[in-house]
Length: 351
Image (cartoon, rainbow, N blue to C red):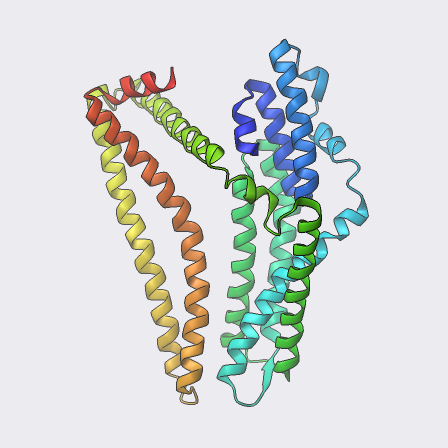
C-alpha cells in the first residue's frame, strides 16, 4: 500500500506519528527499502492501536523526534555512506550536461572547470542548509511533507545548474582542463551507477524501476489516490468557507463563483509560466547566437540540450499544478450540475 493511502486510514495523533516517521525518514535520506519496511511496520502497529482505542503515547511516547530517531536507529553509518554515490550521481549529471555543451561550443577541446566547482559548491552549501537548518525547523513546526522535500531536492539541482551557468558567463577567472576526460568520466559514472542500481533493484524487488513509484502504477491505488486528492481539496474549501463566511466575506450561493474566479486566475498564471519558460529559452538561444565563434551545429546542439533541460523542469512543476487544477475544475463542475451550493456539495461528499 502506498504511504499516502496508509496515512488516510489513520486519524488524529495516530496520523501525526505516521507522518512524522515518514518525513523523518525522507529528510535523513533513509533508503527506499528501509523506508518501506519501517513505515509498513509502524502503520500496522498504529492502525491496530487506533482500532483498539489504545493511547498513541504508549507507542511513540511524548517525544516524537526521539521516537523517529529510534525507529531508524539501526540505519548505520555504512548505510548513510551509501547515500554518497547517489549525491555524486546528481553532480555527475550536472558535469556531463555542462561539459558536453561546452565541448560542442568550443573547438579547443579544453574546458573551464571552475563553473563545475562553483556550481557543485553551491549545491553542497544549499543542501547542508536544507538538511541542517531548514529541515530541522520544518520538522519541529510540522510544515514539511515528503513532496516538499522532493521539490527541495529539485531546487538543489537547479541551484547547481544556475551556479554553473553564472560562473561560466560572469566570472573572469578560468581553470582550463581537457573537457573530454570530464565528459567520459561523468558519463561512465552515470552508466555504472544506473547499471548497479538496476541490478540491485531487480535482485531484491524483481523490477529495475523505483519500488515506491512502482506502487503508484496499480490502477486500484491510482484511482483511490485521486479520490483522496478530491477529499483533500473539498476539506480545504470547507475550512476556507467557514473562515470567510464567519467574517461575512462570502455567502453559500456566491462561494462557487469565487472558486471559478480563482481557477481563471490559476489558468492565467499557468499560461504565464509557460510563456516565462519559453522566453528564458529564447533568451538563452539569442545570447548564444551573439557569440561570433558559435557554429551552426554547436548552436543546434546547445538548443537541444537546453530545451530538454527546461522541458523537464517545466513538466515537473506544471504536471502537479495541472493535476490539482483538473481536480478542482471537476469538483466545481459537479457542484454546478447538482444544482446545489458549494457548502452543500462539500457536506454531501464528505459525509
